[in-house]
Image (cartoon, rainbow, N blue to C red; front, side):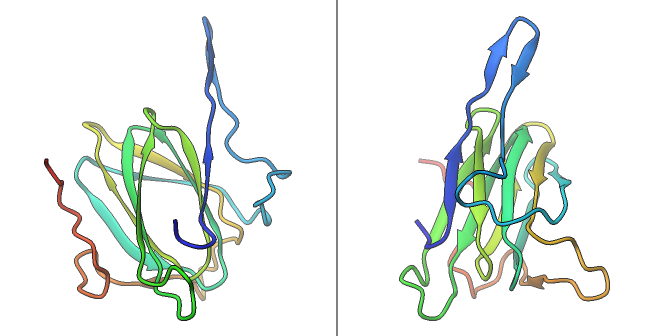
Length: 151
């Protein structure tokens, strides 16, 4: 696992009325601070990648559908430099994924319907000077193929 990445398995609690599931708590040992909360979605087969933040920590949880979330560690001096991690997140595998600064990340909707991701980043979005650094999804700088891997 890439250094600094945290996975918290989530526990949906169902009853005859529906479900409840805690995602992120201020007393989680990895929680830094609250910046904002937003939802991003992807339609089936759509890839949204790649970007990283210099300051912001992301807290991803997929609350509808399924997404393949991929991380890449380009950090000089990191013991996991060059490592790629894949996470299959969503209704069939509920989790919270903590993505530290300087780690590239992206995702692909792998469900038959639109997938919905909730993010609670540590920083509010700065519209005048965004903390976002991007590469195209199919870049050669990251050793990853977004196509489905049948086997």
